[in-house]
Image (cartoon, rainbow, N blue to C red; front, side):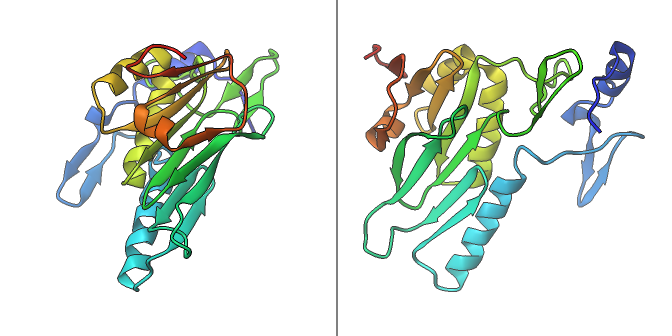
Length: 216
């Protein structure tokens, strides 16, 4: 039963927010009374990594694992070609484009699938800003991260959505080992070089900007 919390209710819950309030000693986790831990930002990625490890331990050399917005590929397709992963358009559910990947994870994050429309007429997504406790008011519609480790891609995709375009572009500019596609509320697409090299677009965008390079 979805509801919009009052300011007082939100202020009380915010007292329970923060990783620094979680105590981890050995294998024992201690939380403050009333606190809960939500693993939504990394759980699917962790599961993908564990499945990949399990498959490979059984001698699997070619596979694709799909857990909703989390895709994990093992090796190439049986014919030796890269796996082709479609990046969904968050509004019309068409394809933004196709990524060709080998032995990589592709994780997409956004608030376009899990949300509710409040009595006030506003749409409330499921990704919350840890600084306010409220749903993120992001200038991004979706974020896709490509990398070897699915749980890292999962965490980064969620974090980038919270951070927004400018801070994410700044982060990616200083971390060339991370590849990503950012699709904005204005219909613009930002890509790292690694993502652009493996991406075939299916849509026309307002603009396509290579992170770290001039716009094209």
